[in-house]
Length: 189
Length: 186
Image 1 (tube, chains in turn orange, blue):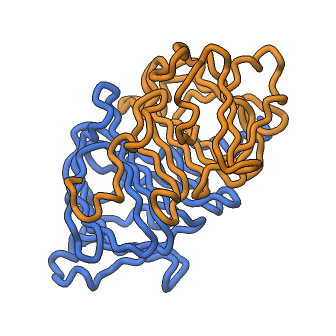
Image 2 (cartoon, chains in turn yellow, green; image 1 turned 180 degrees about the horizontal axis):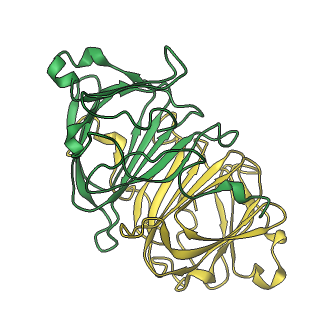
């Protein structure tokens, strides 16, 4: 992708204005980067979280229940060619206002209809790095949090985001002890 | 059986045949109301499942366009070298056919009605994950035969038409290759 006139359409690596997030960023863009684009964010997830001060084990931080105004798609992609459908990790995913629990251990696409509550979501274990690719079917990220839907005993581990409902700005709430300059960065997750 | 099991997709859909590799998931607006088209699959060292397609460069995807934006992700799978694709893809972009060689993990945005292709996988040294996303619930594609004036070049190309002159997907295979999966999604 060596500087030709269409190189702007390709993203090998992190977007310059962003940090790497908790792993290695493959690419992140939305309607503010390309007119007509939905929001796409793709990154590597390693055995332990990286880059976020105070976040050393995955299950320290749980992404709380939330909705989006538009459908969301989350690819959890295992990376073992010898066992291509094995995720090499365990991801806990709650779906619906009933908080139905799903444990993802296979390469899986999750479709989340607009306005359907989903989460809490967290990575329980990573034995082999995998790729997480999140898509919001809108040019700008929208998210509304519902921290009150989780049991009280895990509430202190919640990270939750509000954006595009009451305010266009992204407001990220982090658990105590996970101080971060990461909160104002863009991110599908 | 959970109420939301249907939203967790792992593997080809019911009755869906494998493409050239292994399908991780393939959905569109027929699968879920409101969904665009998403297809993720493994690409191995050699193409699989298509009669006559033995080496990747036996077939080239002809220049084409879509009515809606497309996103293509080519994701290398080596955790020790995460941005290495482990493969080489030759792709042309734009009506002026600017050539590019992709050998790094890459995500590309292709605007609506923007000509792209021909594209050919030249080499795979390590299997990678290929994801095609069309920002529409139904696939659209128009093969642009007029951009390939030489018959000998067209003979190696696969042309796909869907959602322009006909809602059905029509695949024109190169001589001696296919068909296999043109009866269903793929």
